[in-house]
Length: 73
Image 1 (tube, rainbow, N blue to C red):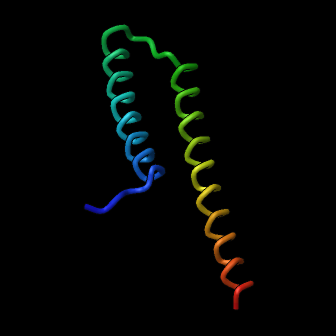
Image 2 (image 1 turned 90 degrees about the vertical axis):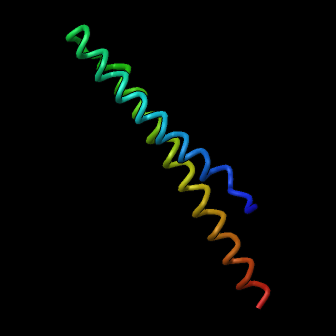
């Protein structure tokens, strides 16, 4: 069995969470007629920031490993 990286699992769980969050917000809006706009924007801002940090970590690791390979040659 192949071991998956933590960041890939985190992205999958984040998308599942956002899907469930969207469904819950739609049901809440259907029942009450109000939407918690601040909560929605904060959740999406947090998930977006988390995704950007993961991308930054991935690119910095690949850049550093590429520089290490260039230094060895």
